[in-house]
Length: 285
Ligand SMILES: *[C@@H]1O[C@H](CO)[C@@H](O)[C@H](O)[C@H]1NC(C)=O
Ligand SMILES: *[C@@H]1O[C@H](CO)[C@@H](O)[C@H](O)[C@H]1NC(C)=O
Ligand SMILES: *[C@@H]1O[C@H](CO)[C@@H](O)[C@H](O)[C@H]1NC(C)=O
Ligand SMILES: [Zn+2]
Image 1: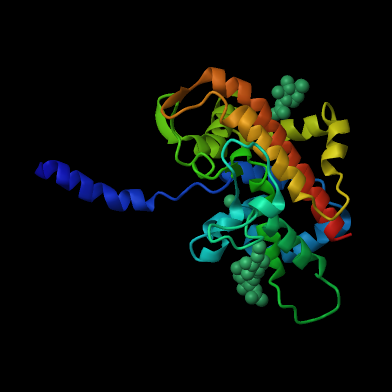
Image 2: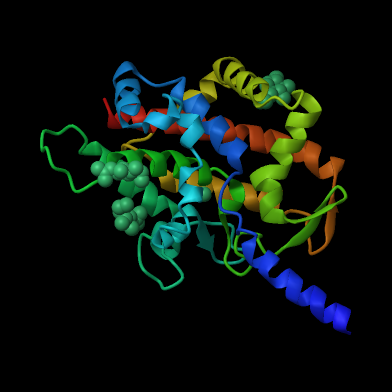
């Protein structure tokens, strides 16, 4: 009894320290930002170089997870990483779904993408003192275009984007949301790319210019500066068709699930990179 009590007391602080997953893991964001930076126009590349903090050494990928690191300091930004949609509907509508838990409109990842795009559109418009921090706007936008492409970042409300669905990834305990943030990518890197993320990035880039070249033009297309509603609608559909499908509490996910879902993860990473580049190219002319 005492031992049990001790274990509970010892464990509670530990549990409180485990951050709620919020977005692709570090590698997912790195991949998307590296792909994007390699596709920037000269003007966009110059603007990004000027806006990146010095410690990034001109590498957008190195600061692509900055928004996750400031989630606790900038508490208001937490709802901007995802969208909750009604359970089992498998559709997304901006007006219905883009709000935070208090019902405040626009506070979701699609609203944040519009917000930081609009801020960046005023960059260099001649007014010297801006109300915006353009460095933060660039880092938020780059991160959120990544997040909206993680299928479970547009998920069901009651399970908080599958954060409450316990599963096993092979022999390890985790939650379904984390499988899509990190486990699928990490297992793929280990098994197919010698644990080298750069090789995965190279392969994705090669595919974007070959097998995906026609589709990539369609991914980039957008009648406005950016099109988060399209990305979110695709996201909830992929969540239903691939992420949630066949999974229940305590499911054991291994090769069958892994091998059939990798193509979806590869596609979403490629789309995220292409669309982040296209958005920044439209913003900075
Ligand atoms: C828009 O950006 C500002 C500045 O970072 C922030 O205070 C506000 O919460 C953001 N709103 C949304 C919906 O992203
Ligand atoms: C803009 O934001 C960055 C990152 O939070 C910060 O380091 C920098 O000091 C801010 N710039 C201004 C002018 O406030
Ligand atoms: C790249 O395309 C090839 C050929 O379609 C495919 O077999 C491979 O899985 C793709 N890899 C990635 C990372 O997209
Ligand atoms: Zn995030």
